[in-house]
Structure formats: structure tokens, C-alpha cells
Length: 168
Image 1 (cartoon, rainbow, N blue to C red):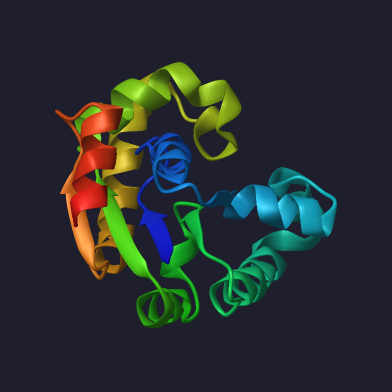
Image 2 (spheres, rainbow, N blue to C red; image 1 turned 30 degrees about the horizontal axis):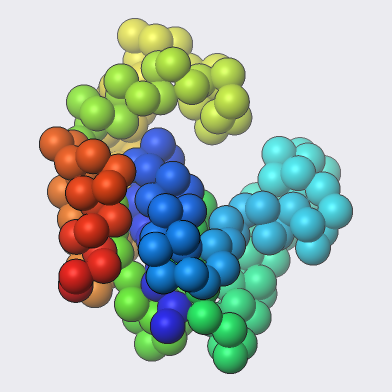
């Protein structure tokens, strides 16, 4: 069993992934952490030193490696992963995917307090953050919507989200 969690940053992919991992007693993998370990650099450093194109190529390489392995796991993707190359096609062929669909309002309230730990939004003013999220989410939603399943997470607890995924 390979389950992939897709969604915008702060949609809960890592938190939900860890709980699912416990529930199914299989490994949890965060793709960004996997890339950092393999590249021996942080994602920010990779972007700064080698650029986004290099990062996206490596991201696809490591995603493909994981998805073609015989291992069972819960995989949390970076928010942009499904939107580049043929990543979404690979995901759909090799896994069961869940889009953790979270409203702009909820994402904004989570990200406003996490800005310093999120390089993509750290430099965006609080006043402009909601508009940034809305535009970015609009660009990415085409890919996210291709997921096998979508779960609206706004009014669900972590456990309720995990339970919905588990019974699907």
C-alpha cells in the first residue's frame, strides 16, 4: 500500500501522514525531508545554489524512486510536487492519492503564524498573504483535483481526517 498526501502548504499533510503511518503501522516519508537527506542540503539551499529547475528534476527523480519501490508507506508531498513534470501521472499510476482540500481562510490562518518557517511566504506581508495563497492555490488546484480522493479538512480534526482516509 502506498498512500500519497497532496495539498497546499499548511494543509496538514505531514501531521495527517504521521498519524496514518501509526494507524496502518507503515513508514511515513516526507518527500522534502527525503530529498534533503539524499542531497545532504536543505531545500532552501538547493534552491539558492542550484535553482528551481535542478530541484524539480531531483524531486521527480526521488519521487519516481520511491513510487517504483516495493515498499509500503505514507508519503507527504511538497505543495508543488504534483504540478511539475509528469509527477501527477506517476502518482496516479502507482498510488492512492488524497488531496487534503483546505480553504484559503484556513490556510491563511495557519500560515500567518508559521511564516518564519515557510520560505515561500516568509517575505510576503501579512496584508498580501491571503491573495498570494488564493492565486497560488488557483494555479495548483488543477493538479490537486486529479487526486483519487479529496477530503475537505476545514472542519475536521486530525483524527477525523485520518479516519476518513482509512475508510476510503
